[in-house]
Image 1 (cartoon, rainbow, N blue to C red):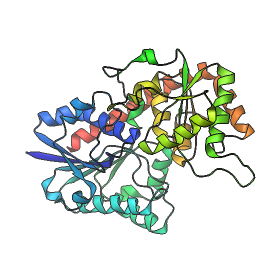
Image 2: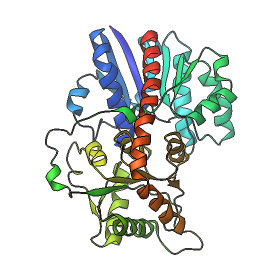
Image 3: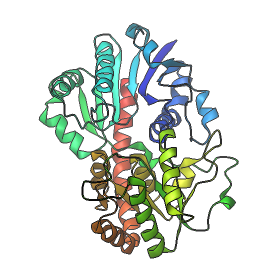
Length: 370
């Protein structure tokens, strides 16, 4: 029986990465299973597909979950393809060690007869000398690299990635086009009639040298301003387990003006529906911006990571700003977005059609290679 290995930051509880895995399984898993492929997944922990509606059915498509360290000992000859379904694993802003792990893993598989296919990738930021030297060398040897944003595409052209065996094409983040109904048991009656979602992530940049506001206080200031301008209630929506403590700090600072969304303590919290049911999303997490855009929901990106402003620009969202949420330009940026929200929806409808065509091209080449 043929085997495929999926590689990414899976099983860590981060909703964005889990959604990418779920999307790939939904679009390709059953077809490949019908072709007698086993699908193995490299995981960081054993809690896979947290926050994904219908995860139990999707897990039936997975043959084996292999811990990251154990995966280093796998024999590439046992697999027909190594697939990275999406995301931005090739970056060193969080850890050079992480980048080197993925590069070494990919390199081992390119040295075998196994196909190496990287789908819907965002490259960077890569700031280290070692990362800048090794990443192009490894990528030139993969079979396919589809890129989710223009900046990554320009980087690949500059580094001459296509000078090797790699086929490069533009794609998009597939979560933009993911359609998902609320999971059974999702109780919308527990939600406010109209609300905005605030998706927190601690940046570590505050308080600034000239400001005494903590990061939680800065978030609370923005939440109060948005509530005054829109009349909407605020739901705090942690996308990753490590964000819960920060969300609780923000909730205390808001003094009753924000609450943590109901159902987040459930085994399968429906983060997808909670995001897409909002009237507005404010986020420090990339895939909250992407999920919102896919549902035509206006979104304000807090660009504590360059990929947030990168994707925002790609989607035609000029409403991203640095992590200093308490500055005056933050409030004016929000006002511009809120006033233009009808235009945002129209613009996104056109943009999503363009992205759908790019994703279809990427999927077509993927199927030809498998």
